[in-house]
Image 1 (cartoon, rainbow, N blue to C red):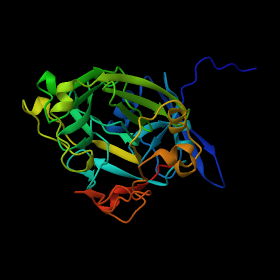
Image 2: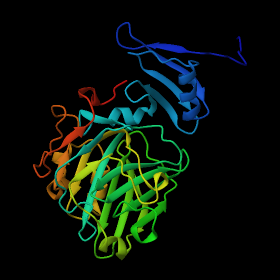
Image 3: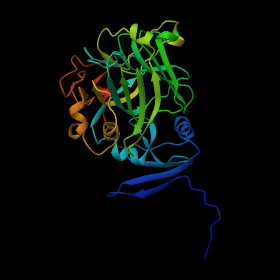
Image 4: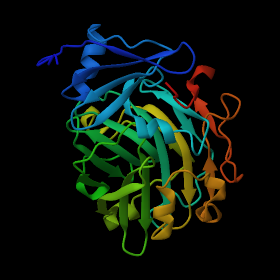
Length: 322
């Protein structure tokens, strides 16, 4: 018997359907290291094939040409369960806006607002990235490090003064297919921030902000809901936010503070939103990317005037499959 003590292999190719060969190659110490190898041309994935690698601490991941990132196999399997397409925001000037918002981002009312991510951009550190807004009310996330993201909320474009802001260091970064949900209860002025992975159904509360009464009293809720739109705040660039970068999908709004079974159902996978018990308690549901560009249509008919602003038809993309 011949024993090979050390075997160095750059790439393995396994035959799939017919004459298709899929690649299993490389072991990286981190996802960042793998992306550096792609950028440098040291590792070159092949379009049209499954390009699998091992990443320590993550497991087997596949390189996606749609979002230009490595994604867990389980996330690919479930990525399209609740929508076939999504909208990608370029981090430069793209954003989504609506003419109205209902109770959402009004700190005198209960509300919930959530979205599913499809790829996260490569955020500069420590620039604040805007996710949801309405008038001067802004919900932003800041990448303090690659794994530690903070939450910064203002009610009047003012992250500089303490009476107009609420912040938390969450220690968790959203993943490529993370589902995000904000739930607010007016009675105790609590804004809860949840992150979860639809591929596993696992979710957790990552922040529980108390909104100061001064934020409530001074809030500016002029206009409708926007997603990914930047704002210029009091105190200059360090207290402002830039456009969101990455894909967004499955936007939901509710005039209720979702809790208990609603949360479990929202973060699960394998069931269309319209089939969920949760659906009856939503005020709005936008699949995102499944309408005719630039329209963003609410399936429930509540949100009006939905548009992708500054984008192109190519920003309405299919859910990644390779």
